[in-house]
Image (tube, rainbow, N blue to C red; front, side, top):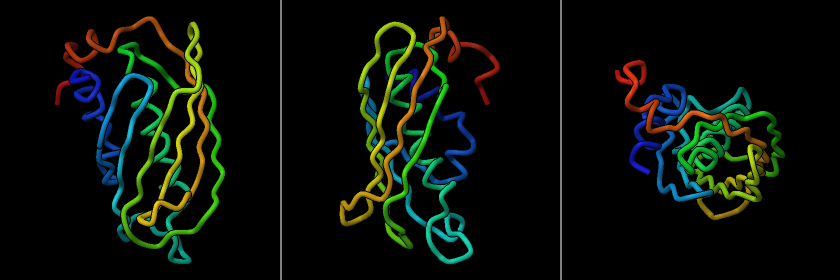
Length: 141
């Protein structure tokens, strides 16, 4: 898991969005994002793009948790509740991972553990190993 976390340290958009990794294990991931002004839309609620970013990053962690470079090939999200403050927690779980295709669900909760949105993603496993990428010079800062 250390190499997976090392690879995702290079995700500048997740860092800019203040997303923190809480836990990663095979087929699962949990992250958190403290809501700030940068996450709010023009009506003062968390922007759908911020929610998508949190869910997508968590999906990526879970999908890559097996050590193989995995990329999204489809994703969708359903927004269930508006949020204006607090810490959001995203929990990804693998539904299936046979062969090259994996299916994942990410639930995003507010500070009261009420469901804010549900993200579903499909991922494609490439042939590259994450351990090889982490050792590659282009992933070093």
